[in-house]
Image 1: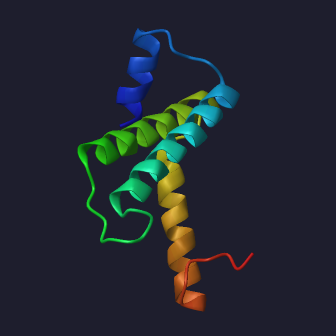
Image 2: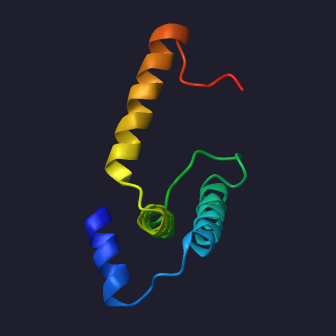
Image 3: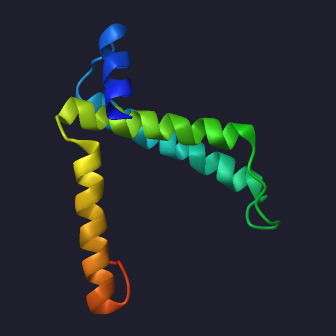
Length: 100
């Protein structure tokens, strides 16, 4: 996925730096949150996700991977490291929270 996003950014000259990418990620997460809230009518009904929710999730993934590209972080490696960390926490504490 990272190669696809990186090639897209290069092809369309969309490099903008990590600060702008971070702001974009936060914005997209907010838009996903709005779709989740709408899907359950503020918790009043069982969630029923829409095409718009999937689109917003895609926007979040793009924004996160684009941020990885801007920061020269390998997304797959970062995810693998997080999974090892969470597995270790769960083995020790029975949960993945850092407890902070």
